[in-house]
Image (cartoon, rainbow, N blue to C red):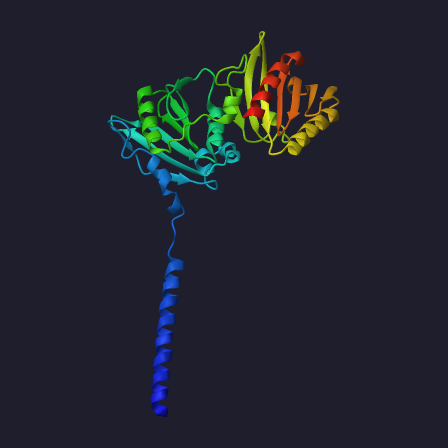
Amino acid sequence: MHGNYQRIRMLSLRRSSLIAAAILCVFVVTMSTPVPVFAAEDSIKNTLPTPGFAPGWVMKDRVTLFNSDTLFDHINGEAELYFPYGFDRLATATYLNKKEPDVWVVVDVYRMGSLLDAFGIYSNYRKADAAGIVIGAEGFVSSSQLMFYQDRYFVRIQVTGATSLEQDLFVACGRTISQNLPSNVGRLRELEVLAGIPGAVTKSERYLAQSVLGYAFFRRGMIADVILGGERMQVFVVFENTTDAARKAFDDYRSYLKVEGREMNVTMTTDRISMTAVDPLYMGVFVEQSGPYLIGAIRMKEASAAKPIVEQLRERLLKS
């Protein structure tokens, strides 16, 4: 009886040891199997045309992916520009035509933090005289490049090995990519606020994700050029999360001007505070804090010229 018990116990222990060994083996294999760096990010690869975007134009190699740690390898010198806008991933590919093997089209698709961030990067490259193209939310094209933004993506298409290329090729490539991207091409609320401002210069609006006017205390906002009565100025809106944060930014600016020895005139009402002054970098300035916003204008000869625009912007912001 005792012998049978011992045999059963030994078999049970052996079975338990085999099960434990099998589990350990699975665990070790799983932990030692390398996981591709971009395994969860392959979807951005599918935005690039495969095998090509027009007759004769095919992908030279394969799609290459970059993240925030490796972006410098692709655009060294420009990478720092992208990080404040929530850069997440870049998919890039090169296309060639066997008839002209030394002329390439390089396509970059950047995934940014949001639709506003994608516009912000796009607006850094757009110029007021750029020829517009109906692709994505907005785009422009020239003889050497095409750029547009759509949803949280910024797309940059350029020719290399030549100074120009048929614009139809850029357009064909851009439209193919646009069809592969999320379809969100809606207008930004921040752009709507600036739309229709008297004297606003078309396509001059920019979104700055940090240091508006180059001042760290103006964390993020919009800026646009305005021409009134032959005088050119810039209007800006700084976005804060709370009224207290906006007031602190206003006070920081006032303290900076005081340290610089600049005279200023401050006016307060029950719901806002405003100031006229001469900025060391931007000449005449008028700025107002109202709710979670700082609204102002720079490069003015007379502060009175900016007050109607600031008032209009305030009304639009508080209604939006």
